[in-house]
Length: 607
Image (tube, rainbow, N blue to C red; front, top):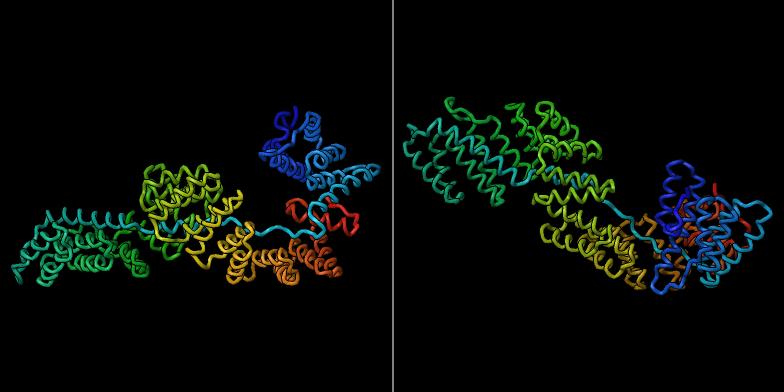
């Protein structure tokens, strides 16, 4: 049975599948050979897909490719296909790659014939590129994924809705207790009940600020602590609803103080509630040491209360005390194995320390116990995206959108996924919605870069420019955005704007070779080879094992007429280029020209 079916012989995906099979077998010699053949198939496919393409593959040529798929280490077949690329398809670079392989694999008596064909291919490359040697291509920023620990930190913060729910639960328990212990006027001040009634009426009308006045008078008048605690907690909940955190904190602190002075006949609904209410508001305010002190006290009062422990774990998480946070979450699960919130908290901690497989398992358990848990769905999406499982990530983020706290972040991730799939209209719509719902943040910056990067990869440079420009406006010290912006301008031929962007990038990270490489290319394009040499030399000093840097330096030195220095640089490239697999095509092509013009009789060793 043939390795590749005849009807698929010129389809890149068929050769990709063949490559994967040999990779799985560990046959690295075959992998290297198939990689070169696949490169030619991909170039041919691109050429044939052009609207004005005149290439027609004959049945004889198809047969040659089919035979090569059955014996891809056969020098005669590699030579035959190399001739197709040279004489029929106009792809001399691809021809050279195939003929190099044929030279390595052929018997001695046929070397001269293959070498003659190879010379013809190299000369054609040289004629097509002009007399001067070509530099390599523009460096672009790498794709950068969001930092998981930064993203999941959002899921470790108590949302206002959860804080309000905590206060509401406390109010319910206080109200139930108040029914069993009706308020009474004190002997010292018989009008305290009137003050409490006034405060209660104002709270029912939503006028919590006004209610604090009679409530404070009632407190001074030694009104019953249970009623005071209830009303102060209610006022704290209302202040919280209006995002008045300091006023909410003040009210809850007074409620906590009152819980400690209640008379023995006042049965406490939950001992640690008052400490928890203050602690979670401290957490929202970022006063984590104060929050920690509250939760330490709450745990002493109720060491097996799962809600207190889960909140305690999240405070430790916010303090970056990850080991302590994990220990507390696992304590809850030891007591209550089906507590979905504890599984969710554990997933947050594990994801933040890059234990992604364990975090994924914890997310799955939380979702099994509560399929509506948006925070767990969101974390599952973050983990799947990090693992490049875009289908699973997309499904998880869609599920998490029902939780408003995660909607802007989920939209950012969905925009990145759509951009990777080439669905740019959808990506831009989701990004626009995320902008409306959230202030500028690091995840939004990453999304802008991701969309720009994918547009650039598809040569839609004008659109890529817009997103890189927005990214640099959002965060003026973001190095990848400046480098990407410069590369987009450069490829569009706007050299002045490109130079400005590269210089901005170099100021941010002067030890990164990318800006210096691209500045060298700009100088060379303007025939300023002295300046180009300075930039390429800086790049080579920063990355001495990078053959591209030495090659570009050699080309610029040669253009200045410094032959001896250029020969030294090219010799350095030869020392570094022991294996062409994985090396950029522009570098290989350039070095083939160099070798020909220097009358060298060297070929690459395929080991």
